[in-house]
Length: 120
Image (cartoon, rainbow, N blue to C red; front, side, top):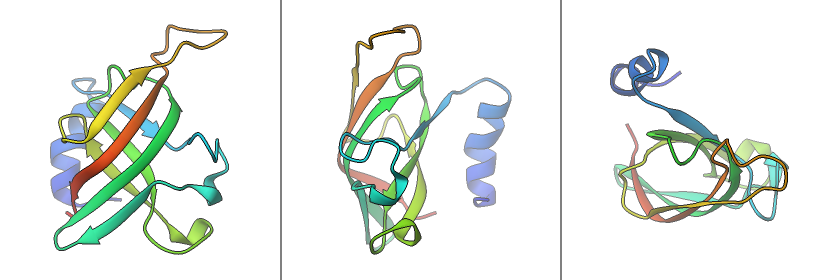
């Protein structure tokens, strides 16, 4: 899935190991209960504006990109979409979390505050 532009810009570098990508699903209030994700992405013209929190995100300190599960529609799983976020997008704040068992996987909390993501 994804446009050819996304494949050319992101996928090739991730697959060859030049860049890193992490998956952002879990949230403080939903955990891994995907149907209750609260992070939103509101479409405004040719961008989505993303707001919310993600937690327990492995590899975030070394991620160049994230695939981020967001709510673009109504309640439940049918209202969810996945967007690609670049670590250099303004409004992304990453904080390392100390975990009880393992601190080697860069587990983090990620705050998303008016992050502007191109629709492309």
